[in-house]
Length: 218
Image (cartoon, rainbow, N blue to C red; front, side):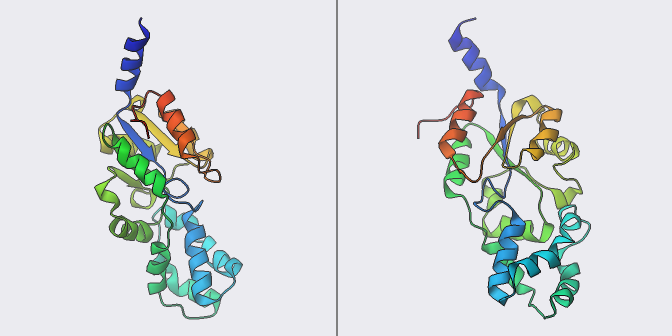
């Protein structure tokens, strides 16, 4: 088979590229880090105290078993002070977007569907969808808290495929946590580990091209 024909076949295979959110589309490794840091600075409470007060609820928040609004009274009680829940929205809005990554996603959208698969809290991501206008660039957006499944299992990836009317062999998933790639690989996604500490967009572009993704020269 001629090389050009093989390349064309590979190019046509990929139809949809899914991004993780925190640590890929943002420059903070996790959403908890963003939220805890902001609340600590806004209240003057030690970061470790805020982190400890919220961490016990993290798994239930991610799986949609509870929401920030439901647990807020308990969090304030543990911290020993009343914190206006409106600070949470400010904390969500402090999320530092990874501008070059958003630019890459916009560029990819010329030839591919672009989605998000994220382990995230419902309150937070509902707010971010609006403030960052995520729906204008990404579809589908699959949030763990909305479906009760995290990236530790295959269910969330199967759900994403169903939402996108796609098959796994047509999809790439990018995440900054290697553990989150395991279930995606089991389902049949092509996967890319993105090192958020290096934040090397050009290396990611090279990995995408090696998988047959068409990208104009940047």
